Length: 299
Image 1 (cartoon, rainbow, N blue to C red):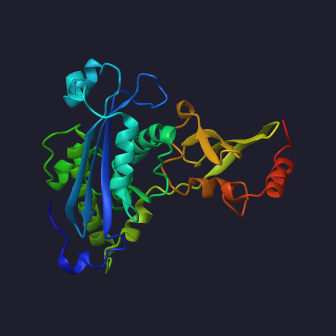
Image 2 (cartoon, helix red, strand yellow; image 1 turned 90 degrees about the horizontal axis):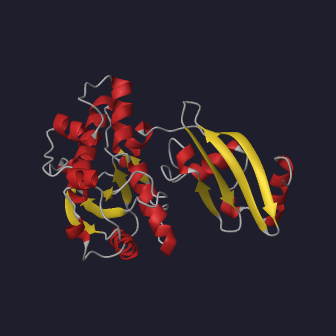
């Protein structure tokens, strides 16, 4: 991997980031035939890969032909692999704390690891995230960069990054890490940034002002939910509800063009759209009851 210049390395806000990727048998984790089959990641410190994570996952079903052809992963490959709970617990332990997650179209991978991880209490919501696809798109839009496209393989080709085993998780994670470092340098060249920090990249991530277009409370006995339709005003939208008992946000993946897992602060943005001063999970009983009054009462 190409190193960042020595004087740049020491000035990064986040000196450690993890680029990761997953392979699966489908596109939506709530589909019974859609399972994780591989998780791969590389840990980058000061511009250098210092550790790797690579595990197959036994999906406990036959891998579809199109996935076998795309990834080269077969039933034989995963027959002795660990189950998804074991792999995600190991991945979370390997990640540690104080790292940033980087991915290409990261919302897809986060949706999968959170969906399957939630079944055993393993979530990845607390990590800051950056989407290299969104960064590349924003730089292209703002500065008119000529690119072959925004797919990972296309960006890798443009930046001269080796991509020798495409659609395998560890390889794609490594390529993503190298592309991310190239994007940092690209952003620095346009903006004449004196110090290269991950925070300097943040403005290029597609920040979306969340607007609540429809709200509805539901209550039965002690169960309380706030159903919310949200949009960013740019054609993207999501539909879901907040469960005040479980203190979790759930969504209808089939009625969303992006997921609530794409931004770690989406819950704050929705709260802001509803003119709240706190995150949902920090609301007390009195404040919840006030929400019921403000948004149409109990239904």
